[in-house]
Image (cartoon, rainbow over all chains, first blue to last red; front, side, top):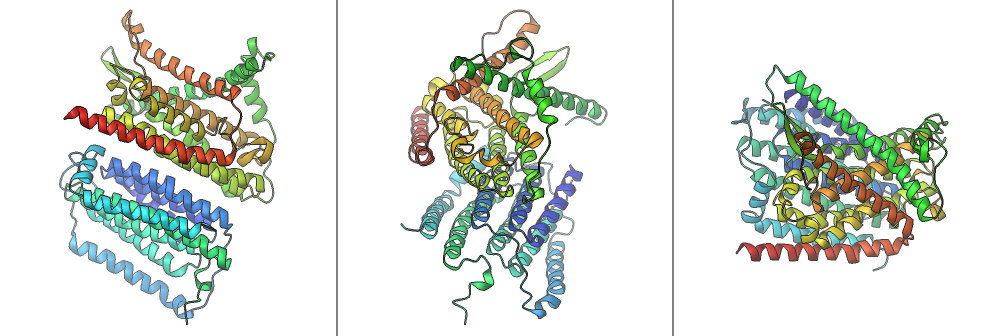
Length: 163
Length: 100
Length: 342
């Protein structure tokens, strides 16, 4: 299992870099889809089958389709860098590395070589997730559904020409 | 067996890349996509901890995050379409009417 | 997990299984095209392909040879990377979902258990939906990258159509999942040993099948192609091998959807089993294939009979009729289940 993790972790990071570095939005979107799918594999390796499939169905299959459609509709082509701030150009990369180093250091400090305790979760299939979702977390679940409803209304109000 | 902190490293790396995207890109659509990257970085941590603590709760939270991402994408893309209709641009730095 | 010593053997067995399934699937696709041409021809009182081989049986081979030797034209203004990626994406995703479809009961011959399935995921059904939902990209990207108005319109239309009908597709099978209490295709089939789901969930089946026809972009929902208005739809600019990949992807999707309909609603491989052990082992596979064949025939029958929807009718039908009906079906099923369990 270990080589699979490394392959897909590296793939995810490379594709994520490509999301940020590509100048054409469609390529960014495609790279993001690669990130999402490789993360789904990482979830599978962590024993979260249900979440992995949900990730592909909702993230890669619904949300990203929306992105691709909007890019196609707006016909967003190449983006030209603005080159406005010289300070950002020189300080950006070092500060970024400091930030990343800090994050990694924090993780390393808190979890010195912490391995997972057991080989696998007892059960992380749809049954276990569903039971938890509809018993312990039923209030957050309902609140989320209201959030989705509001988002749908908001999207219609914003995007429709004449109501 | 992959130690838990490797997953956290992966999450941290994706988070940083997402932050870079939000800060440096001009195209609002790409900025939104970078935000999705950040959300995914959070999800990795949630799932990794769910494994570490032997509790499915983390995965349930990850599902909530995915749902929120869907809501965010719907509203965000709606905003982008409305903006494009009014200003004919998707560049964040050209939409500066409220900036003085 | 296998132990270290027989790992290569296990890998070989898996590879062999994958090879056999792919071979059968590709042959089915080729002959589904032949069957379609024959049946549609008979519906329109023509003869259909008759020249190559007896009853035109070698026509698929001739078609394949012809299409491989055609010139592969890439228009100058296309986005090359995405343009070449899209057909591969469509085709490989269409083939991928067959990997979780079980064809028959597991049998034990000479101490070795043979599963008629490449892999048994306990979220198998969701896996198929995940792969189907990714299939939109092939179409959408083909439309966008061709840099032609017909392709773009076709791509946009079909993505919107596929997203809309995916919801109904999912809602249609929720009832079945609730009845079986599992997302594993094998368990869903085993749950139907008493009564096929189509009798318990007739509304669910109708929703599923209608949405499935729309999802595979077939008549009467074949608006992405819509020859009379959009030339060829999203694959207007494609030729030769790349066009063939879209074509095969469409038929592979039809086969997958038919397999799924058989598994979810018509009891999969269940059927009368009798005779000597070998027959006993192979009869379930035969029943499964027979049921899938009936669905393929139904697809072609529909194609030969029904006219095409208008686009607004299609959207209104999906969102205002099929989706509410699906929700209602879920509600009624869960109420009945709850009432029965108390």
